[in-house]
Length: 222
Image 1: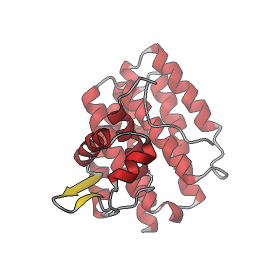
Image 2 (image 1 turned 90 degrees about the vertical axis):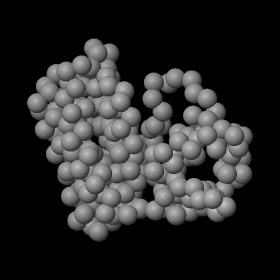
Image 3 (image 1 turned 90 degrees about the horizontal axis):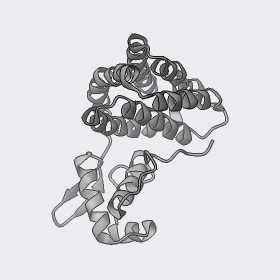
Image 4 (image 1 turned 45 degrees about the vertical axis):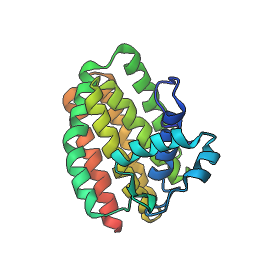
């Protein structure tokens, strides 16, 4: 399975936005390790952008709690504190069901068709043969599509931030999760179908179960 880019809508983006999305992905998927210093000269060269767009991106990533800057020391990827899992999950367990409910109520016909298509693609995934990092990227992609379908940009922004933080914690323990644990991603099939068919109560319930189920799977291997 090829990794799905985290950009949405195929919209044109600035160099700073491109840098933000690329570095965000590296931080979430631990290609930049927790606590690792950010070499902005090298990173800008790798991304093919100037240092000014990269600095703008790093400021946004600091607001997202993915990097932290220290005077005269530089910028570093934030550490991962497993205690944060409970805090992040508490927020997501309240807001993910709300987004799923709103998506089931508000999604346009075009988005319902898109969600149905994603459901079918999720059903067809080879969970046993796929790279776990690719499955996590798919999980992110599905969540972002649901957030967009909820038609509340403020809710979308908040959920993207906390889903990023949750996924980063999950990725720390990705090699300890069993193949069966990764099948939790398959739960999206029922969730996507509930949203696409306009079942807000069921969508809300399934979204809550998914968030809590992934937290339980991670805690079991800590």
